[in-house]
Every structure is written in structure tokens, then in C-alpha cells.
Length: 181
Image 1 (spheres, one colour):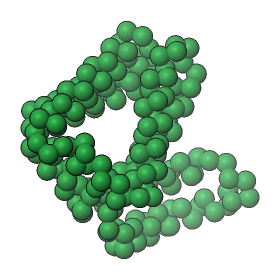
Image 2: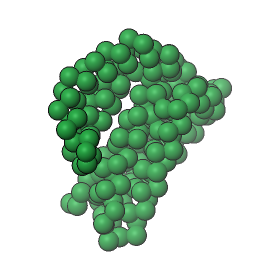
Image 3: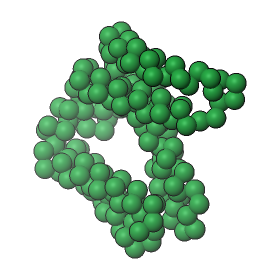
């Protein structure tokens, strides 16, 4: 299996799981979407993951004359985590989710870049959608609150329809991972 097939398989399984849960327990999914922007612990956990991942990515980058500052990441990251959790509590969950989308898109695009199949563009488009959502949720987290009722709808039927579409997309990605990549 190539790296792209592993990534497509993981993304497909994640999307299939979310779609399956939306089909099985739509009322809990809808309630979770509405409650997520004000949720404290998911935002804190995602923020810690984002800050550690961003510090790791910064430590690997060539920053020219700023390379000497990399040694300060070890003490700056815990302070940034504390300040983020303490003072950035307003809509922290969508902001941290946006940061996670931005961070996860980079490795996915690097893996898809050199694959010879034209079907790599499916994973590339998914990564660019993550980038757009990540920028939106990071800079304007209230958009998550605007989009979640539209995605969840006003009844369980809408959640089941979006769950079915997600499950089909997940199955399609799994098929691409196993048959094409």
C-alpha cells in the first residue's frame, strides 16, 4: 500500500464512521453539533494538540535568521497552552477545530502531491476543503454556529440524509484506497 492509499483509507474510515453514527443516532449528532461551539473540554484538548503540532512543525522548518529562536519553543509552548486555555475560552472549540483542519491538510497534500494517479485529486480537494473550513473556523468561529443548524437541519431526517451522503463518500474513498492508490 502506498502512503496515499493509507491516508485515503483512514479518511474514508473516519467519514464512514461519522456517516454511520449520523444514521444510527441522529438526535445525539444534532445535539452535539449545536453544543460543540460552547464546549470547553473538546476545545482545550484540540488547542493543546494544535499548539504542540504547530511547535513541532516550526521546529522542522528552515526559518533563516529566526532558527536561533527554535530553542525557545520548549518553554513558550506550555505558556501558550496555558494562555490559550485560560483566556481564549470564547468559541475555542471551533477555533481549535479550524487549526486542526489546517495542520492536518499539510501532510495530506504532501503525500498526494507526487502520486501518479489522477485520482489523487480527490484527496487533494478534500484537503483544500479542510483548509477553507480551517481558515473560516479559526478566523470567524461563529460561522460554525451558523453552519451547524444548516448541516444538522431541524429534524433527524436531515441528519440521516447527510449521514448517508457521508457514508457513501467514505465508502468511495475506501474503494479508491484499495483499488486505485
